[in-house]
Length: 148
Image (cartoon, rainbow, N blue to C red; front, side):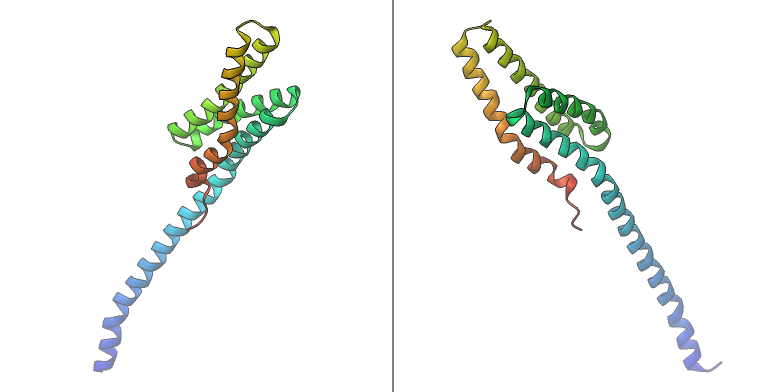
C-alpha cells in the first residue's frame, strides 16, 4: 500500500472521531436549548398570571381581582414543578399579600379596627404590591431568558 494512502487512513480515523464528538456536543447543546424553550412557555404562564394579578389588584374591579387571585393560586400549584422553592415562596407571598390587602380593605370599610392604623397598613401593603412587577421580572428573568 502506498505511503500516502496509509497517511490518509491514519488521519481519517481521528478526524471521524473528532467530528462525531463535535456533533454529539452540538446535539447536547440543542437539547438543553429545547428544554429551556419548552419550559419557557409553562413558566411564562405563571409569570403572566402573577403580573396580571398584580396589575388587576392595583387597578381592577372587585370581581376581576377575585378572578385574578383565583387564577394565580391555580398557577402557583404548577409553579412548584417549574421553579425552585425560593421563587415559589415569592409568588406565594405575592398572593398572600393580595389577600391581606383585600382583608384590610374590608376592615377599613367596616370600621373594625382603628381606621388610621388600618389605612397606614394598607398603604404599606399597596406600595409593596406596586413595586412587585419590577421585582417579579428581575427574579424570573433567569428562568425566562432564552438567550444562549
